[in-house]
Every structure is written in structure tokens, then in C-alpha cells.
Length: 407
Image (cartoon, rainbow, N blue to C red; front, side):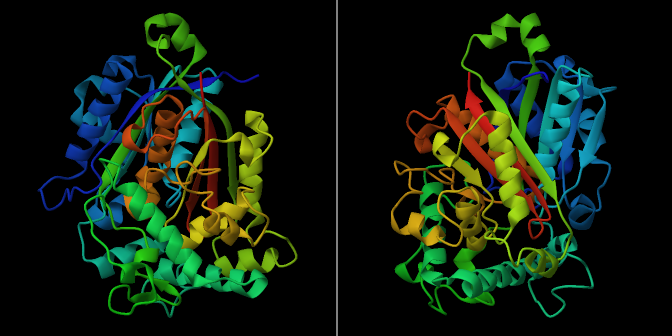
């Protein structure tokens, strides 16, 4: 059996902060995340054996690459510590966590610092959308789109509509729930935003169309921010029993699948499958199997990738909350609410909480760990002991799923 991997602590920046407007860059962001993460884990920099950094678009938004070297640049005690950057579009943070787990399970290192860092508010919204489009198959899809990713997830919504039928009011309900949940999250980008009834309707003034059938509140935010967690193995805890006295979260299971870049190719290959994105379903089932989780009802909640309302709508049936194409039932029944059958995105997710791309997968693991150890504050799911996460990159090209449980 591989070495068990525990989450010793973690930290998230305030996703409402515009780092560029404040005159700060990756150095300041990395410094805050590293120090906050180590403080929460009650560790010194010298305790860290290896660092894994999730970042998707550093060069495009800031010109800065080689971000594996940024932690040692700003925290001198990390000088000489092995480090690497991982890029998998919006799943960069999830892949960084997987790499850290592999290091621990293989016995190479006992204590890994996992960081997700992204700065996106350095350019105009139109330019940001262009940079983010690099995660599609450039030059081969979305060539008529002004905004690549709303266009692509509108196409996914069209496919759901073709196969099963889709009422856009259910997408609006997903948006309203996530924005509402975000109000209780002190780090959520939209916690202070105000909305009207028209914000969640087909109201061209209050909620204008962005691309296709997706409107403004169907979309996650352009966000600056970072998140970090410390992952450790049993050997480390044996040497530091003082750190094992508090309830700890453990990564119980994981799934990781990668397919081709184009959305059309994905949809063509799944034409005869009950699931629109069967590789996403397999990643979830892989995580369940490794965690010894029978099905979604063994979870107390989920943090999922809602880059758009359609990605959360797809996650609902791919997690098995409903049958394929029946996600609307969980929305109408209130199953996704805090206090419902299976709360989804109690943090506000990406739509309400914010989406600094490379940080999202790390933030999900952190929120799951906080939930199962009773540290989620005002958005705590009462009695949570097991949480799932789903982190996707591109049009689900890279999918990473985790199951996190309490000690």
C-alpha cells in the first residue's frame, strides 16, 4: 500500500484583491501564500522537502516563467529545496497536488509544499480571455468566438440540450446558489457584490449574453490569487507527533484522466455513451474506488469546477448525484444547498469565490480539508467527514478528482 498522505494545513489569499492595481506581482503573492501556508501548518521553511507550484498562464499575463524558483526567491530559507511548476490549464493546481502525493508515496520526500499561484488582472478583460484561450486547440476550434471558454461551454450546453433537453433556468439557479454561498466566505471575490432578480434571468440589461446561451452570471471571474497546502506522509508525522494531535484531513483517493484538446472530439467519442464526458465520470469513479467510497452518497459535500454554470451542471450527473442528463432534478430538489442531500460549492466555487486558474485545484483541496476538520467557518457543512473535489482544465481535457476525509 502507498504511504498515506495527510493535509497538515493551508492558506488562501483574498480573491477580491487586485494585486496588479496594488503594484504587487508574483513575488508578493508567492511570499504571502508560502508564509501563510507554513504558519497554518505550524512548520518552518526548513521542514519542507519539496515544492510543487501550479500555474497555468504566468508568461502570458506577466511575462514571468520559471515559477518553481519563486518560493526560494522570496523566502530565503527555501533555497536549495527541490521545486517544479506544473501546467494543466485550470487543472494545474490539481496536477501539482498529484505530483506532491507521488513524491510522498514513493518515499522520495516526506513533506511537500503545494502552491497554486495566478495573476490575471494585469490586462483588459478581452486580452485576458484571449490568453485563457491558449488552453483550447489553438487555431482549430473556437475561431469564431470572441470569448473562447463561454463559447465552448455554451456548446457543451447545446450538446446536453440535444441529448437530454436543457432548461437554461437551471443554469441560472446554479449561478444564484454559488453567488449566495460566496457571501459567507471571507476570501470570496464576489462576497460584497449585489444582484437583482434580473441578474439570474434572461435579462439582456441585468444579465447580458456573453456567448451563445451563457450570460454574465453564468461565468466565473477573472481573478488574482493563490492557495497553498502542506502534504505530509506517515514518516513525517511519526517524527512530529505534536502535529498529529489535532484532527487532520487525509487524501483518501484520487482520479486523473487526460484526453484530447478539442471539445468536438470529446463529444464525438461519447456519442453512444450515457455520459457526455465519460472520462470525467471515470476520474470520479477512480477517486471513489481508491477512497473506498461506494458512491456519491458517501460524501458530505463537493467542491467542483464551475468555471461556468454548465461545468457544474455536468459535474452533478458525472458525480452520480443524478442519472445522466438529469442534473436539473438535484437543482430543483434543493439537494445542492448547504443542509441539502449533497452540498456543492459551499465556498461559492469559482463563480462566486473566484478563479485564479492555477490556484483553483489547490484551493478545492484546502476547502475540502477545512470542511472535514470543522474549520470552514461560516460556510461549514455540519458534521462533514468526507468531501469530494473535481478540478478540470480546458474543455475537461485534464480532469483531477480527490476524496478528502477526516482523521
